[in-house]
Length: 89
Image 1 (cartoon, rainbow, N blue to C red):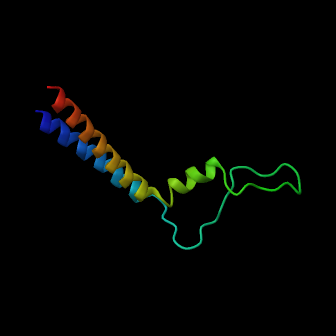
Image 2: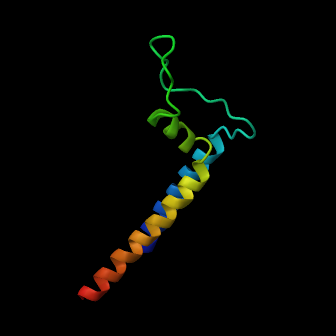
Image 3: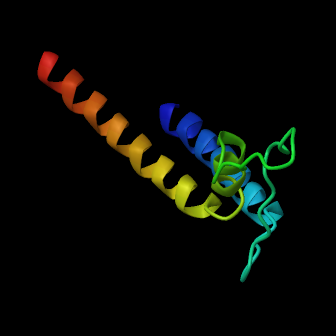
């Protein structure tokens, strides 16, 4: 019963992952930078990047490596929990 639930959750997770990867607009080549705000006055220097820019790049250009890293960290967390529970028993 547990394996069936795990399999169902795995299929749902993979379907969501594949759907998010397929709808991501992969831009190759030069990427146009859009800043999260515009300077209020002329002569004010714009920052190199902001938190909005980091988030936009993380979920567009670096979507696949980000998801891959999340799966690796999830596996490490589950393994650590499994080892900790095994030693307690």
